[in-house]
Image (tube, rainbow, N blue to C red; front, side):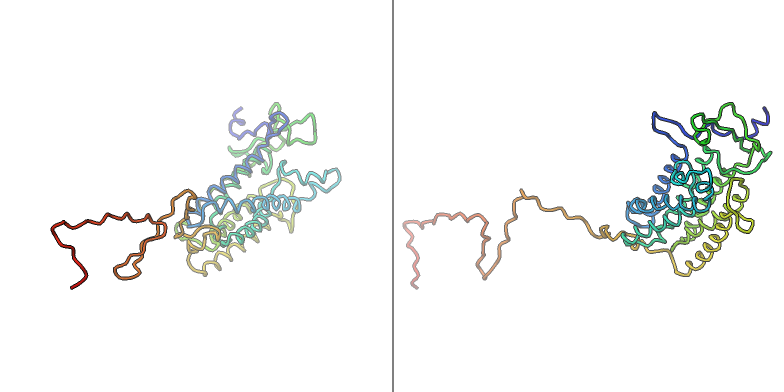
Length: 350
């Protein structure tokens, strides 16, 4: 009993059913992460002088591209899960069962963001800086989904924060344990294990704090905040990846994702240094969408059809003569005043 209290228990299931509709914890975490990234990115973009609503417009392109890219990276780096004997190739499209490679999501998501930024007339590096901390926090939220799926954990450990992983059962589909339920809390043979998903979650939050701090202190621009995020994330992902025990392809004795982290870390550092030579952060006016009104422009309300037209002003054509506008009311003639009877009338004769 004391050993059980010294470990982290796993959830009994990761899928619930609302009638015929399955509610998957992994999918809900991905959606929550996207919402947080867009909300925070929008606030940071506006604070830099960008147009309100731009991040949401960019996300319309970037999010679908990113989901496709993340799935492609996962399938390409782990093809044996879908294309070997006894596997169902159509499961490669079952994104709701888990399996998104962050680097594929970032790469193809950047393509979607680039297209949207070109349409808006704004620089992609500045947008990347604005959304960088939100992206890494979204990754942290996504790791909670791995907890519910009982995946991405490490080897056996006796540490107090070891994770108890329970066997799940699915009577309707014995091979689909992801949709199963843990009954009786029967631990797997290696339990407790290192909760590597939790390690990465905490590391991601630290990277987000680092990016925000450095951005405020040094006014990072031209994609340097995003490069700092990539460099910081890959440092942690590299050593955490080597603790995992799930199936993965290896190159020269290292997992593919470890090599990816090494290469991306080097590239991010080079970019961070090179971009620093481009000078200070982008000017706020360069971040305004080309379809947004300028700072000095105010919308002009159209004249109402029922409004009375203003009369034309009187124009002095000749000295002593005043021309009256055509639509002005006619002047009222005053009756001539007759002189008194006892006073002779004046004549034009001298």
